[in-house]
Image 1: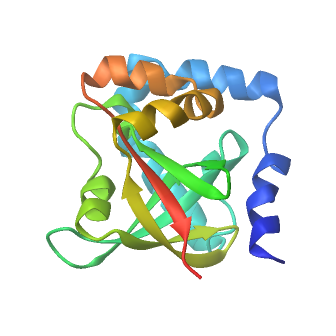
Image 2: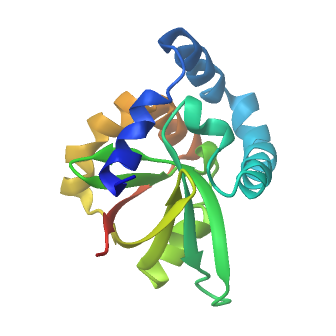
Length: 171
């Protein structure tokens, strides 16, 4: 399967709109924000390991990837399952950390080491990452919140400016 076809499969695998909206309402709640960082990533990692990266818990609600980074301090390989928004041939990821006060570790890793890789549906490809500036972020924000409306709530709850990265495929 071509890589572009793999990216398009995101839209085909989405849950019905009614289910997606219900999950989004729960995800915007404070209780979910406190519990999610401890539960969702380990569940996604386990499911990705069993399915060799083909299936993630969250992929039926929002397009999801496994981001492979190099640790900012340790230099060791790190993996994070993340929601993503495909847009104009690139992928965008938001350092929401479920609305927690601190930025997620993977965002520090991308700042220190912009070359990373992404696994989607079991296929891994290298990407270059760019931390968006205020103007670029403002331009893409409506597409991000359309895909995952809780991002606006995460901004309120965290009290911080969420980092947004553009991931561009490396040929």
